[in-house]
Length: 325
Image (cartoon, rainbow, N blue to C red):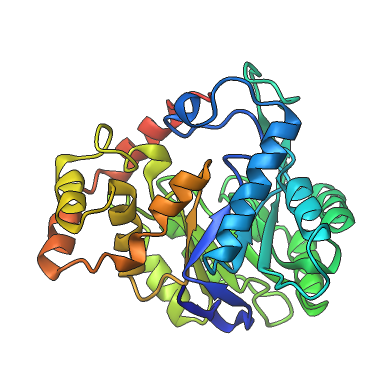
């Protein structure tokens, strides 16, 4: 597994990281979860699945793990896995997020799964919760889905608290979502607290269906920020032959891999992308994702995949209609 440094943070990461959003809580918006996980998802079963994924990821050379306060018990699952490892075991770089609270009560039929709050009180509460579980193993703490509407990029008290966290040695980043991702990234690049920008990394959605944020991510990379890509499989739309565009399926066939590997390979072909997250829910899915580095996409294949881009508003409208299952 190729490794690199996450921008100017100095944090060592692997080009493919593991995100635990799909296994930290019973419901999520990825397609195919009933097939992957069945309908019986008690806490202990999901804990075991998380640990199996983490074991497989570490064996494959993955050195970045992504969790969040709103991912149900993902931080706890990761913490218990870390606690069970030998003292001399390699500890991956760990990134978590604050800004959403999980309220789904471990129910598949919950009407509301998470609630957003970018206030200073929420930051302090959730940072304490994260540290109680992960301790000094936390390397990167990110604003979860920063938006212009929440006002967080103008909230001097929150920005000062983030700057203080950075001064303590924890890298500070933000994640973005929605059709205005590029605008948010550029606004964050201009944030300053006492002459310094508290942010050192960004996590954004980029895939062959929704590449609109790419120019802003190039700017972030050029500014020294680490760049993490999420939702490379478009919440499952690019994962399987029956759900992906024919061009993706045909490319996968030519390279003797599954479509998910092609979608991730398209991210790996971007020099500005430090990490692309696998959101696998099973070890088999992770192994399929990990075929991506073997896929050397030709220039004409990359051009063909670029024709699949959808208008950003249409893409995010379709994503908003995906049910939590």
